[in-house]
Image 1 (cartoon, rainbow, N blue to C red):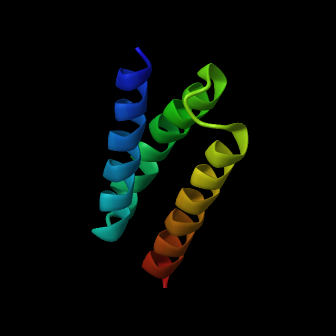
Image 2 (cartoon, rainbow, N blue to C red):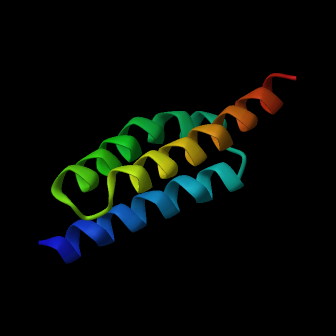
Length: 73
């Protein structure tokens, strides 16, 4: 169970980073809530620590904000 949860977390974060790297703001905004949900669930069941979850979410959100900010200009 832990192995599957950790793999799901890694795959979701990779997918989110790939979408941001491809500069697809709409897809990134659509993927963000699902990614945050998986990160939060992983922290809740102990797959990752609480601060690690917060760090992942912060980094992804900052990348999304810079992407949407640059898309609006």
